[in-house]
Length: 273
Figure 1 (cartoon, rainbow, N blue to C red):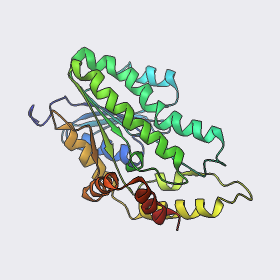
Figure 2 (figure 1 turned 120 degrees about the vertical axis):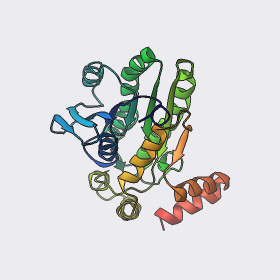
Figure 3 (figure 1 turned 180 degrees about the horizontal axis):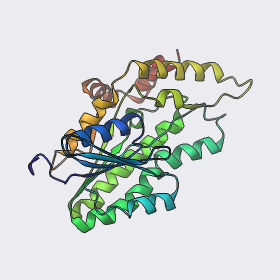
Figure 4 (figure 1 turned 90 degrees about the vertical axis):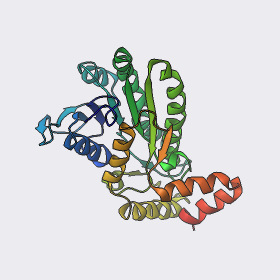
């Protein structure tokens, strides 16, 4: 790799690396000669080497535990690129879903990224180079009914990355949020859906979640998102945000132009009719 193809370096740190988009990123970067440290709460620790000179070392780490995050990240000698992909999903109505579900959602998807950034940034600033790629979602631009907590956590990441880019620019660091749409991963089967007995919302919850699950099963491969991450890693000045694929770029562009009431009508037709 020459410097134009690899402007940040070859040491990559990836959360959520045991499944889904995180795993796809870990494998793609390792196969392309990068030295990858992947972390997950549940993984088999160890190192695998690849023919192109890259490697993937898996470590156990919980993004919801500050001590776990600090212990693993501060032990790494260098992080050139961080891909923060760990996440989970909660579904259910705002009225019915217990507060502990909402806290768990934000603790993983938003605060998990924040904890990692706080540990990673001192390492990158010392090197005066580095790239942080946050895996967001199209749902961070368009709220999905009956998945309001998930959308809220991804909206929060949008705001954080916007501010982060400004804060770290003087130190020659970059940040970008990648916004996948429907993606075919194990995330679909692990979604936490809350149904309250006798609730008037239950039928709509099941319809909305069922539509989302169907769309995900027919969605993009996680390697399509990993390839976008690789493309961003080769850009000296990556964009603030990038939607995954022409279809979702078009959807976001269209919905931005629509009046609020029209946008609500479109989303209602997709998930609630």
